[in-house]
Length: 148
Image 1: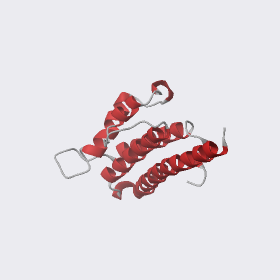
Image 2 (image 1 turned 180 degrees about the horizontal axis):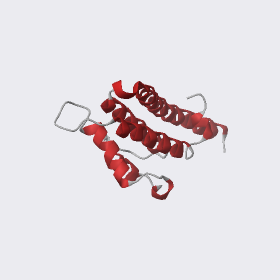
Image 3 (image 1 turned 120 degrees about the horizontal axis):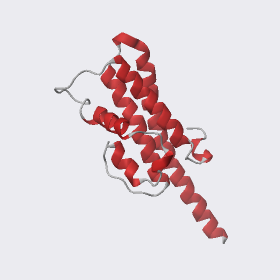
């Protein structure tokens, strides 16, 4: 490869990795919010925890989509984002879990007529987010995960 092409290639990767890292940082902040807030136990805002758990997964999926150069819509629907990726068998993430997390981002984000999430549901949402996060991190290049 010519030197000019190598420099362009390296610059392109650096830009791409910067964007992917930006998504990962936001996802990690959502997970920190959910994980720390759940420690409040009976006094915690379960809807907020569930929302941040969903946001963590959504943002990790979007980081993966960016890495692969796949355009995606502005949507919190986990199932829709996963359908854009060609990794269906690589994520241990049931359809039921995908629908449930998407519900937390769309329905419970604002006031409305829905049942309050229980502490057990919030704990489960965080557990799912951590599991999916770990699976997606295994699909990302190590360079992207450094100093996030």
